[in-house]
Amino acid sequence: MTDLSLMPAPAATAAPAAVAPLTTAPAAPAVVTAAELYAKLLADAPLLIVDVRNPAEFARMRIEGREALDVLNIPYYAFIEDEDDAAAPIPTDREVVVVCAKEGSSEYVAELLAARGMAVSYLAGGFPAWGNHVDVRDVAAGAWGKVIQIARPARGDLSFVVVSDGAAAVIDPLRHTAVYHDTIAAEGASLAVVLDTHVHADHISGGPALAAATGAPYHVHAYDAIHPIDMLPATIPYTSLDDGQTFPIGAVTVTAHWFPGHTLGQFNFRLDAPDGTSALFTGDGIFLRSFGRPDLGGKGEAWTPLLYESLTERLPAIVHPHTLILPAHFSALDEAGADGVFSAPYAAVAATNDALRHRDLAEFTAYVLGHLPVFPPEYVQIKRVNIGLLEAGEQLADELELGKNICALSA
Ligand SMILES: [Fe+2]
Image 1: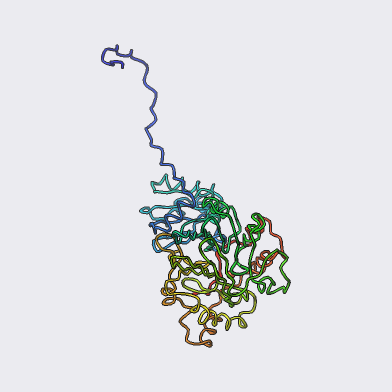
Image 2: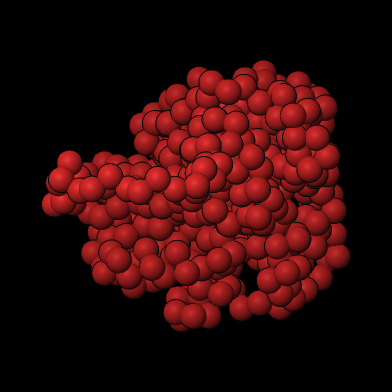
């Protein structure tokens, strides 16, 4: 170390040049992944999402959370036109996450907000990363094996893997199948059977692809293998389901129960484990707070009485009060427990679900036909894809699946 006190004083020089004032670089915004964002949403962190996509994109799909989440749509070009004006509605006392269509414009806006001293991050990969985020967690487990929930939170889509003694079943698989292969491999199991509760209208099934890749049989009911609008039969390989048919998966049994209404060929699958664990994969038969609309085949009035019979007679006959209801969709994130699992015992669902509070068929029919949400035209196309009448590459599939599922009755 040099002792400066022993050094000679520097010789006098000409007048020093002006020294630039010291500045502190603004904190760079943090980057948040879709998985990290979903964990914050599940934990109901007091977040503000600043969505900088254009209003039309925002209207089609947005990030939704629980109570504490606020969302503002301020298009990124507003920040270019007048930064002060654009930033004015953003409170400075809460954590802000900026999201955009790709990533670049949210990074740009997040940098502007960070320079204003805000605690801000932006979503890695933009909206497509959120739209395609897949969440995997255990629903139930025992010595017999486990049930794993595989969710696509942006769309409110839920699917399941049952694993027992080295065998696996997949129920209502979503379009991108890698997560099922990975999950089953991680459990040291092999796929025994692929089950779709029905031919879905809101999303493209991964069932036929999983079956083709593994040799496992793909089951859906023959009624759903005829397009309800086109009246054309499926061209994909499938095996029909029988009411009461059982599928042994290791130590558990999965039983198929016909549950018409949402579609003619809708089935529920009940899992029974040796320790008394009971779960019902309901597809779009019944959700935790609502139930599947009967009009997506274009036959709403004809299928509503079938749905009423399924909900009021078939359902109570196939469940215990403790049977876990595991639906294929959710409408709001607060349907999930703190553990991120979308399930409830039948007794709790029966006490709170709109589907089960109507006294008679006439009242039920009036309620159903009075609460049908918009019918997305893509849903006719998606059913064509799901039975092989139309081929969809990745780009068309993305377009068809844009937006949240609208399979439930509206509130
Ligand atoms: Fe459906």
